[in-house]
Length: 188
Image (cartoon, rainbow, N blue to C red; front, side):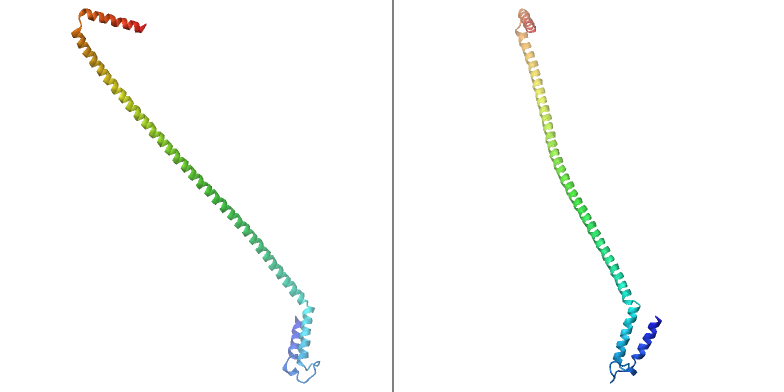
């Protein structure tokens, strides 16, 4: 570092206007172009002696390596992000398909339940109609039976009145005997 300061001081003096080129030959210290060229070559030599280009190359290589590592890390992160995105897209697709299956299943179950409800309603209506028809038939049979019973009672009473007016004691005994014989014949 000290040598560099001394050299830069010498070069600064050599580059002063007192040493201007003017009419002097190129290879003389009086020619500023020659002094600048010598100073430049000395400067480059000092840089080479202290291995500055190697250090700069090492720094640039280190920086390039760091940039390369950062780029590789960025690629890795990008690949991970792509994989994560693909995973989420797959999960989203799976969830969408599952929700569509659930909706389709729910619609199918609703349709089945509606059809079952219709069938149950038809069966209930048919049972109620059958029960109502049975009640009507029962009421009709009951009414017919009551009418027959009253008709029989009226006919028996009328026949009894007619027979009572027409019958004598002998006819009544003969009629009772005939009725007994008919009952005996039917029972045996």
